[in-house]
Image (spheres, rainbow, N blue to C red):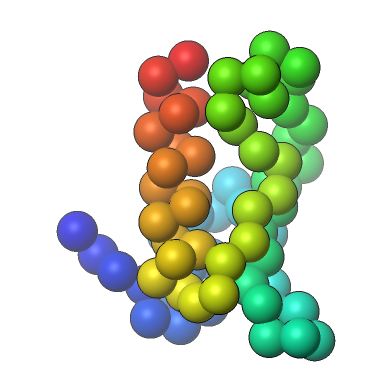
Amino acid sequence: MFTPVILEDLQETFPGWRIWRSSAGRLWATRNGRHLSPYEVDHGLYQTVDADDIAQLAEQLRGQDAVEQAL
């Protein structure tokens, strides 16, 4: 499994998300042009996720992909 090491890698791996680092240094990702339905939110999808580092954010995004595929 590929583990992204820089933000550009992360963005390439997860093109459906807009990824950035906040001024406080925290990493964030929000879905590009897609708003979740109440059903999707109730079943574990998030519009925006955050993490301390790239590896954690990649894990969050993989988890979101898995939940989405299960729906």
